[in-house]
Image 1: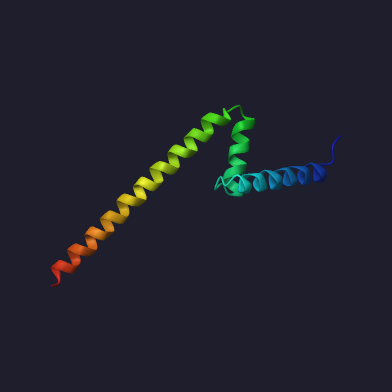
Image 2: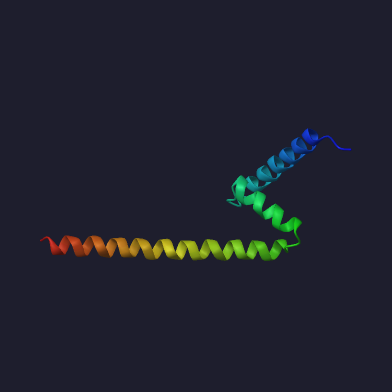
Length: 84
């Protein structure tokens, strides 16, 4: 029977190595996100499909951030003109 502490150390070491590889590849994934991706792949999710979903989510997030900045800028202009 395997030692639970040894198994935990092996998992931690593996995740640290994966995180370092992730950083070298400039994926932008943090430890929590990387851990979720690993668990999804272990459950049978296609890694390429998962990568595509992450890329699309990042694009959508950036688009929302751009729109929000435009709304904030328009609000600032409106407030400025209102008080002149």
